[in-house]
Length: 213
Image (cartoon, rainbow, N blue to C red; front, side, top):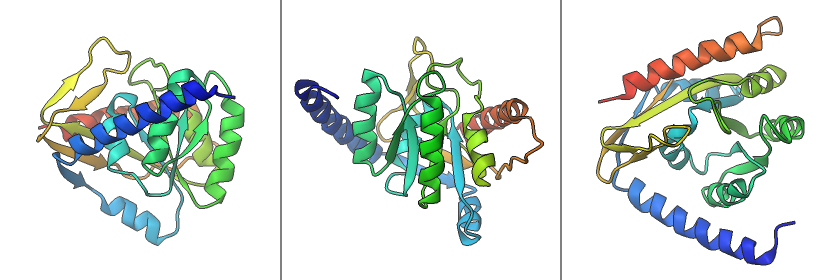
């Protein structure tokens, strides 16, 4: 159980972070590309697993808020704060990662999707290697019969934190930005999960290139 002082500290930090994210994002001129993919899937009643690169989460998180999406957050102290931030934007957070609590998190994700949520994964998280997709999202999609939708984004003006493992991208105020949705990917029982993850990683990288200005 989280101690009260840390709980209070995280609540205050999360409120401050959400305020800054909201203020900055309100200045961004956003363009959505191929958004009809989502409309088609929703009209057919299909479940969706969104995948994206960890370093692109600033834009993806803010512009998909309050859409009944569950997202995986780590069990670390940083994950405690991240969970508070994401919950404030309307996400349901499932705690776990590929290195700790993974099977429990997978079971919770399966249950959550049965409750009507879509799910989202930073597929190179929680600690890299950067731009190398892991298989968790693909296992989940296969078990739930869900469509995987790649999501890539890029701001025209941005700060890239080169020393961060994920090359985190922070959009600058009043920048233009694009969010691109890829065509759905389906995982069959006979498919090799790691091969599918590698193929999807290539798709995400190509989409990121196309999102640039």
